[in-house]
Image (cartoon, rainbow, N blue to C red; front, side):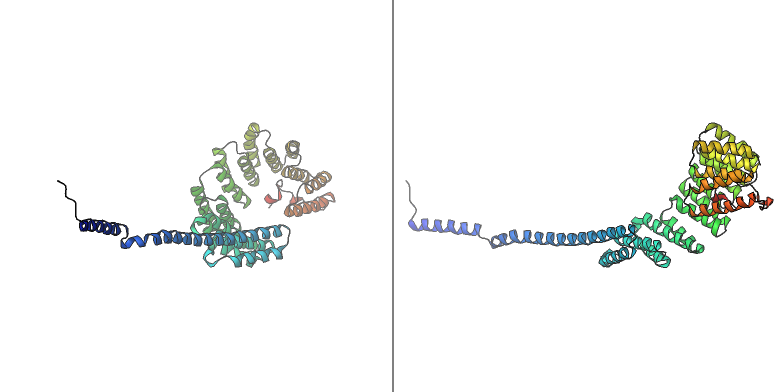
Length: 386
């Protein structure tokens, strides 16, 4: 038998269910969900906006600085030095304080240094390049080395050789395997400071850090030869040839060292081998001619140098040695004509000065006014003359 619930029970049930539905759909947290759903995207949007603003501002400054530097370089190439300086100083003033060690700041100081150097404003150039080096971070050691190398060149040019030594040492510390830094320091010690023992120590470090390669021996030999340390140049050049027989420049240095040492016969015997292996190497024929001059075999010297000129008619060194052959052989008119030919082949001011002095000596020889004792073992370019 079925009994129906009283009406009040139906009412109670319906209220109970209704109350349960309200409790499940409207808890206290339910009212915050729409707010959080809007707040989080707004915060993210704000953060993105700040980031975009920062990076856009930074990029804009960098682009402006780079544009000014580019304009300054263009002005520099047009010799508009005042405008170039103004542009670079303007670029420098725009760099934010937090970017003082940035690449763009280094670049501005570097370009100022180069500009001042071109204008021979040596103190300002040195100061700008020193600042550029100081601003380089640890990740820019190679750039720092270049700035310091430029500083050392200014010191040498302005007659402050002792100041260049610690600068080159600092450059080597920044870039230990850069060859020209080591070679510059060796040349400084040999030629300017006259400290051969220190130079020898620098040489050993150079070979240790940059490698005992034939080209390194050859390059060091060239410096020792230029500075008249002939025993050393001979040893280093021989070491280079032992590492690479095809390195003609090393064979030439062996021959030149022997020639300068007055060992011309030994030099002639030596260069005969490389000449047989490399008969088209103009410098070998040229150094053979110099050795023949040293041996006072002027006809043989002329034959060798004429062959060199036939292989390369515009080779300056070959033409210069030809002039020296004719000069030492007292063939004055031909020597004078050859001097004029050499003048047409060079724009180097030092070489031009040497050639003009040689023309004067040739004229004195033609007039019989030249001291016979002035004839020596001459037969090399101006850079190798005593």
